[in-house]
Every structure is written in C-alpha cells, then in structure tokens.
Amino acid sequence: MKPLWVRLIACWRLLRTVVHILTALWLIRFELPKLSAQQKKERINAWAHTLLARLAIKLVVVGQPPAQGPLLLAANHVSWLDIIVMLSACNCRFVSKADVHHWPVFGTLAGAAGTLFIERESRRDAMRVVHHMAERLQAGDVLAIFPEGTTSNGEGLLPFHANLFQAAIAVNAPVLPVALRYVDAASGQPSLAPCYIGDDTLPGSLWRTLSAPPLCAVVSFGQPDLAQGRDRRAWAGAVRAEVDALRRGGP
Image (cartoon, rainbow, N blue to C red; front, side):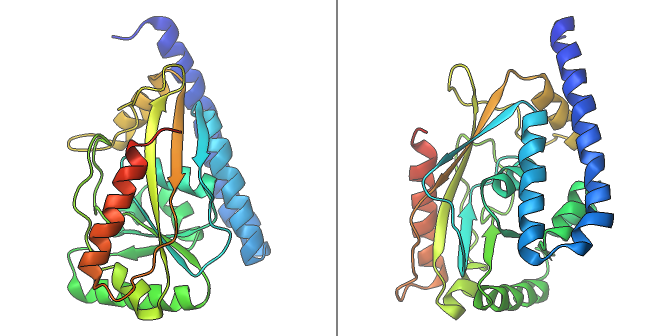
C-alpha cells in the first residue's frame, strides 16, 4: 500500500480532475455549439491541456506540430491518455475504435471533437471509415490514427495495421509519424503508470496515474511522408520504423 501522503495527493488530484472532467459536459452542451470549427478546436485543446495539468502531467513537444492538413498522423498507442495528450499538442480529429465512444465523458468529448468511430471487426465498417477519412483529408483536415489497433506498454511497438493508410493513398495526402512516451519528470525514466493494457481497468489506470510522481508526456513529431508509389502495407511498415525511431529518441 502506498504511503498516506501519496494517497492524499492522489485524492486531491482526483478531485480536481473530476471537477475538470465535469466541465466537459458544460463545454459540450452549452459552449461548443456556439463556436466556429476553429474555435471548437482551440477550446478543446485548452481543455485537454488543463486536464493534463490536473493530472500532474507536463506536456513536452518535440518537433513541429502540424498547423494544417491534409495530413494523417500515425502514432503509437500506450494509454487512454493518448487522445488527451495529442489534443493538447495539436488540433486534430481521431479515428478510434467504437468502444471509446461509450467511455464516460471521454467518449462524449471525443465525439464532440469530430472523432470517426470504427468497428474494427467489421470489414464493411472499415471501408466506410476509410471513405469518410478520404473525404475529410480532401477537405484539409488533420486526422490521427493509432495503427497498432490496441495499446501496448510503451516498451515496444506492435505491428501497424495498414487499412487506414489507404485513405491517405486515395487522396495523395502525407502521413506524419508521431511517437508518444510517458516518463518520470524528475528522472526522465520511462513510466508505466499511464499504461492501459491487458486486465487494466480505466479506473485502475487512472488511480495509478494519479498516484505516480509527476510525469511528462513526450510527443515527438517526425517529418511528413508521402506514399510515393508504395502500397499501404509497405508504407505502414516504413512509418512504423519512423515512429519506433522517434520513440527511442530523447526529448
């Protein structure tokens, strides 16, 4: 069992986090409908950045975040926090598994941010989402995907699923590799506290994060990469190698 003072700090962080999460309900219901698309992005970005602060997580950005699309971001996937971290680092829309849509508050906020939800087990639904992604890329959006398809512990990188890369090929849009890491703020060593894998539950992962020493969420942006005649599998493999190289680098 953690020392009493650690649990008290975690409880204080939890209280502040819950209060801030509840503000998302007001944001979604009363503020966002009155805002322009750009204002919505900026408001959600500010909300996500404040949530990280409530969790005692400092955002560290390496490289140049994208300012505009069309662009497809391809990132590794470690935690339920990944969406919040990326929303803090840049303005983007996500392509996410349908399960996220049912998460309390976070799913509602993801929907309000324009997330495209996909039933990964359904080939027909994947085709629908790829078509919708291509339309959004043609409209100049920045879309973000997690090609591993599930979370890992951050110490390795799972194979990339290539299906969603087809949308970028269809409209000749570049892919930008993105690496996410969570490290102890004091030592710079990797932290497993925010991981959400295996038998982890969302409340359990949240409490572990709240109980951890202050963390840094490191977001490393690579360089835009065009398909240049490669099929989606070859391109996904090359982007995976770039994400792995970024993940191994330091802030």
